Image (cartoon, rainbow, N blue to C red; front, side, top):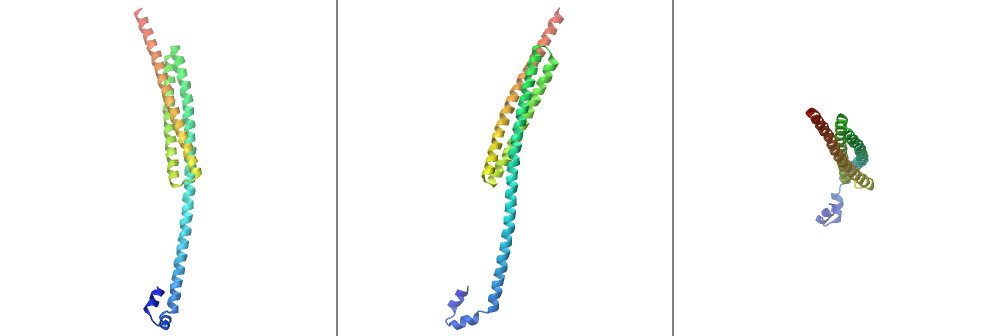
Length: 189
């Protein structure tokens, strides 16, 4: 701006007269204040950004942990479904219909629990992936990958628990049918 003013004057002495020291000093003071405000705004923004990154990092870690725990829960539900299906088959072979039905019901509940665990793992993996979208560091990427793997494991466990539940229900129904057939034969005698 001063250079533009210089171009307007032909005589250098006129330039010095037009520049008022008080005006220059006021403008410098205003600029110093503006720089200080900008610096303070940067400090505040940087602090908030650091807090947000820290929160995203924690979210990613918690989501990964939740997915791993959900996968473990799905695996435990699968083990319970396996035991229930075995109990249902053994009960059915011994004509203990009520035990077979209870075991089949238990296997069904285990399958539902495994499915819920898989859904939980999926939600946690989605949360981790969302955090990675905002914070692409190695820790977040690793946690997101672990959450995705936990989801895969939980989904496989849920599918197997559901298959076992169906087997248990079939065994219970077979036992029930055998008992009904036996009663029919006894009634005909």
